[in-house]
Length: 469
Image (cartoon, rainbow, N blue to C red; front, side, top):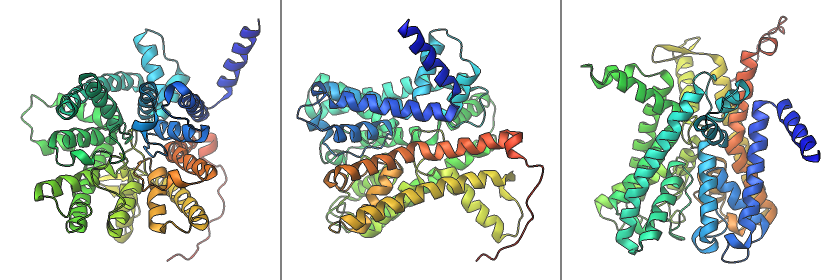
């Protein structure tokens, strides 16, 4: 009787929640469960306090990668498996995983569940989300499985331990695809493999694929499959892609290329990073740095020894992040694209935002500005607070670490583990804002746009001009 009442109460409570509220409450509940599990002695080799366990669980679920304890040294094999599952859930979205379970077990997905999946995947509408979940599940299995196998074989070349190499390959494949940045190598992350082309290529490839978004992958798959047997050049195939996919691809290529060039220029003579490397290793390390700062968190060169200009470049890339509907964080490439094209439209004297012969609504610009403002405020506020109480840290280093948290990147300079417990909680809040905040704002704005009672006013306020610029 008591169980029935509790079940009825829980069902009624969930039904009253909006899709966004369900996502947020579900995320926080998973975070709490993960924290409790990582706090248990069975998950640890050494004693750990709850705040550090909570920090680790939050970082894993937010696919950030910032740590206050060395993942390899602190956690047992069971603890490492828990972290890997939290990363997978955070990267794919817990509703995607639940939906996959229902789909493959033959259960029906209702309208409310479809709306929640839509918000979880950051899609514009709920139509086709079930089919997209099926594709995502299959793609993830294939991509992570194949990459894990190659990484395992390569790690076996170094440590000669068959079972441990398999787990290393699986863990790093999951962490890289989900743009988490957790590793089991040690304090130096992937620095021992800075010249290993196979490991670098697989990790960079997984970061890029995981960071471009599932809808872009689906669009590419559909267009190139449809035109596979037609004699059409790549440009015409590319033109068939949606505007969103075009922006994602173009801005990802530009950011990776120019980021790599600038890192190479800035660090080529720095003997504490890549200055003593061969030209091949310099190019590989610079390219890896350009890709990983876009929310991955792995590194092959010491982040503490980067020059100030390189750290600031990393901050810019971390702030931008990956693409919507992906495992990556940041304000997203499409937000910065809309912002840049809106400025270009103003310069050219156009009333509308035009991108590749398509008009973009002003509401999209509002969303982009809202997301940028939220992340910017979180970074500035937290940086100022920590800077005020910790004079021993350089402000650029604090800004680097906080941007890494809000952008769910995970690259750190050793600041987080030296903070008091309440400042660790502040960084946890930054990671949660970076993971959930922009998505929630975007979804609220979409809901308002779709709801005529909220999105349209019968009486408009009188217009009055103000001076700007």
